Image 1 (cartoon, rainbow, N blue to C red):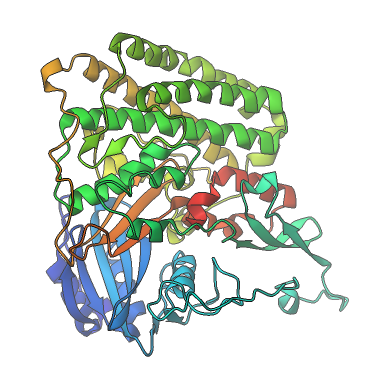
Image 2 (cartoon, helix red, strand yellow):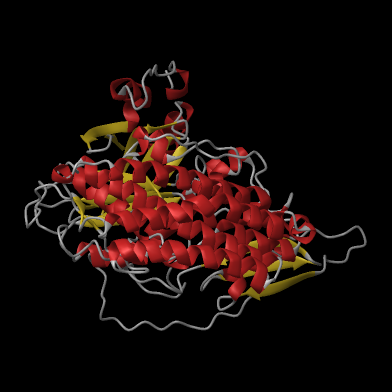
Length: 558
């Protein structure tokens, strides 16, 4: 009996996965099984990857969250981290080992379109080949680069010669011929990498047919800073935490810190005190507001071009949030406020003044959002440029692994704060914001509504903190000075970052440093679907779509 002929696996409660039934469904594709801290993992033959992933997708695992490529002494390995959009606590991993002399196995791209960029990255940095991949070329390094930097046999002393590539219309040979026999009038256009419309060092290789986008290929890697490798050379307890602030410096740093903290705390079995969880939740939502206000400001600047009314209104309000975060953390961008097991210190004194400052900002949020609607969303030019442009269909967005405001604007009701609860979120009253539009306008509206929901969360946290007994304000768990998780443990954990699912995979080897550290950046994944939103649109719409994604290249290139 084929895997597709088997009955569906029955599940009841959130996160309840019958792994034995899944293993039966996968049949002889499975050669072994491992237990990771977040989920069971099936070791699958390299020639059965497509069938195995198709079976799991049919069982509801429609979200390929991430892919981790690894190089061991005796093998290479790909780990596909899967979960469900309608039940984020239901997870499963698929491990595909390959021999060192032939690191090659089937591609996941026929099942998940998001695997395209993930596998290109694993090929580029680790050296794993993915058979059947539609476009297996480097993604972070120049195409002429020799070797794979994360492979154990990489010669880092070998000089590299990067040749200047002449740009060519990538679809020239595939363009249809008009009835007259003349070729379509196409033009190749470089957008970026150094241009404000690209929101960072992003290079778009764009093919235009008149003013319409016929093809667009994001060229990334200009900012690659080896953040994952720096974390692998740093200790869990003290040295890694300052790095996450730099992934998304919008600033959404506390959200980034929490992604690492959640993964490391589960890896080391650390329980965070309830009081510290409330502070984490409050500070995380303050950073979410700060990040969303910057997204609104720059998006308005991209579309309307009115620096004073749109950009400065949002930046004015964001500055108030940054003042509050500076009072709390001592920093305006690179906070380094979270610690494994809690937070570094308590709320600033006098507490009453801090609470009053936060409440004054929260009380003004409704009036401020009304201002944004008056100057931005009710602007006729803005509506013309954003309504029905950059359309991202619901199922297409899922196929490309979209998360955060991008996904929720396409009607995907997915938010890890609710669906995979952490911190204090499940104790508070708030709503997940979704829209059905799937266009540039919907993405902005989701962010603006999320600012209001974040304000609701912060206000409830303030109420709780005000009444918290002074002698029960535990800031940190009792964490050893040197953390050395047991060797061979593996975990993937994620939080709801400002731009979507920010995930961390770690593998321990018994030392005080991770053997493998992989970041699932939401900007990287969301950007991979740009061509789906842009083909057939006007070139001016492409600029609007880039702005609506709210990417930060430090999170794309990591």
